[in-house]
Image 1 (tube, rainbow, N blue to C red):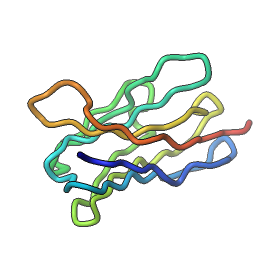
Image 2 (cartoon, rainbow, N blue to C red):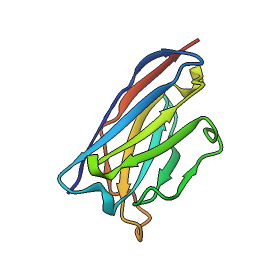
Image 3 (spheres, rainbow, N blue to C red):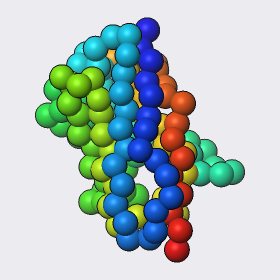
Length: 119
């Protein structure tokens, strides 16, 4: 069992940057592919991107490509989402998730952290 806790959310202005963290307990994160998602009010949860177990490869949704960067520090059991040039439409609850590489279902989820971008 893996417990994930996101942190770093809050209120920022349009154009600002913000870094979210996702820290795991229970098991080491190094055996899991990690992903970031977000859910805006009244909308479905959207995939933002993911990072491989070693951190050697990443992929991103077109909506955030070039503005968001995912990284990880397996020694700290933590994954990061660096967000830049934030827009009001980035306002959402942001979630991290973990899955094993040979399973397509995201098995473990954090509770989410609110990000609000004011115009």
